[in-house]
Length: 194
Image (cartoon, rainbow, N blue to C red; front, side):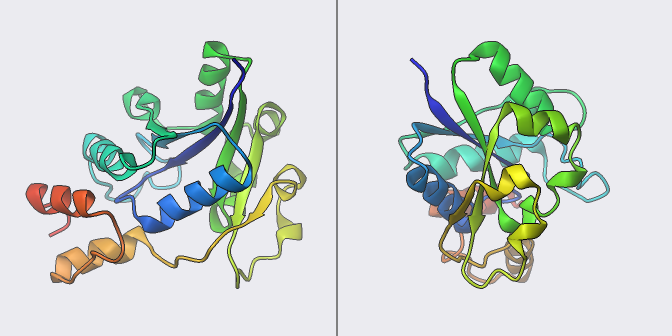
């Protein structure tokens, strides 16, 4: 059976309510069947940054999406050698099941940088893009690549950053309002950001 599947990738260091809210909004408002979440093995844009081990980020992502029955976590990018590129993941998925319609989920900040992605001209031919557009976003959507403009979807504003969460853990501050309890428990147990 043909499915309409949203592809949601990211470093997720850690995954938080901002990520989850964006994914749920894009899933519901675009009437999709499933969302597949892909923690990046090595993000092409964070190679020079100190990023938490991919296995830890994968496990946090699994814990975070447990309450969402239409979400599933894929390990493809964590298991693949080298840098995680969307084009490689999309080619793999089309080999597995070319009858499905795949759409990449992005926040507006990430959408602004898509023109720098590897083989983006081919990528926009293979999949659709859904871009979460929060109220108050100061980016002009006419600056996005044309294929992304078609998928602009109004989403709720949750101004949360993984960087802020890591800093809060370092300082011993509460983060219960920013990410799922099971993810917090995992971070504390493994002393990830302290």
